[in-house]
Image 1 (cartoon, rainbow, N blue to C red):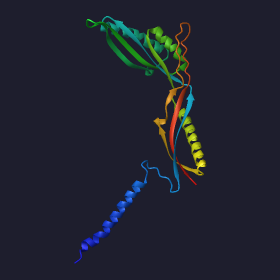
Image 2 (cartoon, helix red, strand yellow):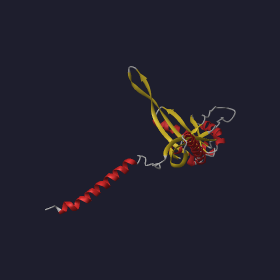
Image 3 (cartoon, rainbow, N blue to C red):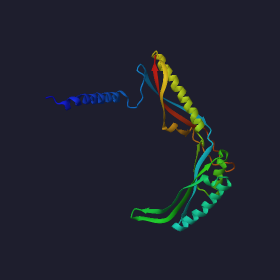
Image 4 (cartoon, rainbow, N blue to C red):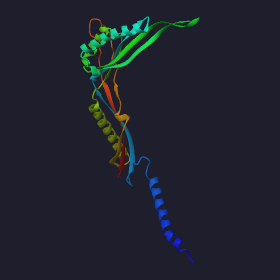
Length: 247
């Protein structure tokens, strides 16, 4: 007597097997990045970069006081008194409180080394450093001079940047996109095809870097303000664009 249960289950098992095979075939046919071309199309990936230049409108520098004394407390107290003058000079220069940020308060022993004995502490060095943002580029030279005159004996910078780089970055993006389109058209013409569409666009390095075109040169002058030319900053955009080519 035939097994009616097996007879009824066989079509169901075959159907499930065909469905699994079709699902596996679909998964293998799709590229790893999920981008699919039309059946008669060809994908072309182009990486393009562009830059936009702007005169920086903001500058940052670090300034502080380094003090030395025979004991730790005296070094810290001398440093605090001298740093009060530095902070007053910054306020007089029009620097807002939000643009002054402490980056380090340090105290280190000073040693005398000898070949025949252990290092001997001869005194202490205290330092206090702040990072200053100058939003009026024309004031950067006078600000540096005011810091030195007020007692700052450690000045580093300035570093110039663009406060709001969005507009310049969009300009660089448009230039990169146009370059990619032109290159895609060149490839299509060489192959006897045409550019059908843009399949995907991705940005690299979060829209590209912002960096100075040239380092500013700082020269100390006694009879005039310190000259600090800002030069230009470069805003970059890196794109990767996938085009579909076809007839």
